[in-house]
Image (cartoon, rainbow, N blue to C red; front, side, top):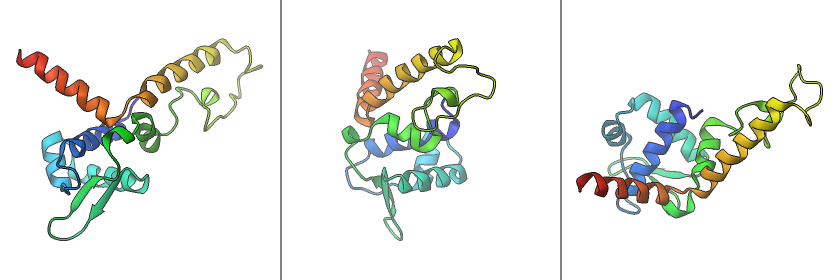
Length: 147
């Protein structure tokens, strides 16, 4: 399940993707517009910067901007950076595999087998989506609602 940190990080990145390219946006503006605690968003933005998704400037006119084009930022990479592996259980993870202590044979465990499918389906969606495709879907929904 996507955590609040992951959700808010995606919301902040989409907000930055809507901004004028290269223009810095202050955390306070993002927090206000996206209904996120500024203190929590400060920590999330630090993580996004450390992961290479955003860059920042200090001083007057400072703030955050995307470090790459929206079409170059996969949603799956963002979620992994903020929330960790996509697998719902550790024994189904590609990057953080840990065997279950209660499992006799991981190759035949029915729970693990279905969780591998969940992981693969989730990764398939998130790794093929980008911030740009999220914007496209949001803009299409806005037009549909507006009539």
